[in-house]
Length: 365
Image (tube, rainbow, N blue to C red; front, side):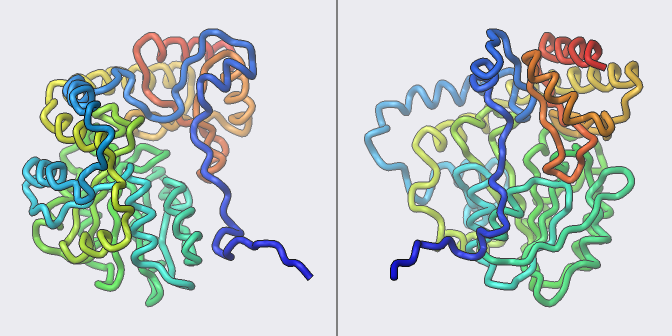
């Protein structure tokens, strides 16, 4: 009697991650010619010019495998951030590093502490390794609740993910709170500080998480990305900093060529493009302030954002409002999948895109 091939049990509860709806899909589905996407937190200024030039120069090398150890890239990151190269890990986007951390440290029945309303790939990769997710609520201010996370840790806990600033709320946890949290976390738990949006933070109270790594702490992993402020979402390049013991563990299971030739060249060049970073941060702040003023005018509450998006409270009709926006060629992110069904997450676009979104939302409301 034949039996069909069955998936491993860790996949039984996984709902595939659904990214922001692509522009071309919306054009085809609704017969539209002019569509804007404010759903994936992309840089509206485009790509770092220095990174683009470096990728162009690297094109003739595409017939060759990339450096599997990403030596020059990791060396550039180490110099830029004043850490040892042995403390630097790189990946095919930050998602790749989350997968590697899950593969390296999780076994059946281990626990992973995450927020109910945070980046869903933590959940996906933990469940794929048959770990148990322990989810904590946000605070009343829509911030990651570090006290609740610390309270949830047990002897079976292996990983804790702290997204700071948090996606999708845009809120931060401050240095004093992070220090107190780390002091409560036992040594057998790896704390992953996901700082994908760190360059956009405008707060003196934000922690300098790399100091934990420089101090030699063995249970801290600081994770960042080139997708946001550098405009390199399309080539997938992420990086992290940790004790060399953690990095060497990830080296055992990472794919041998996980950071491609273009990504390594772009990453090295982007680190030197301070002018583009400054332009991106300034434009983001102007756009963020504009959206917040308009939400105030419309009587809509929103989370205090330190990122390139704003989480706005629409109420129970949020999913219907999001659908009407899509039908009018404006793509934003519904947040039901983040356990925030009454909210929409709106990426900050160009001035024209922001104005179009507000005008369209005003008409619908």
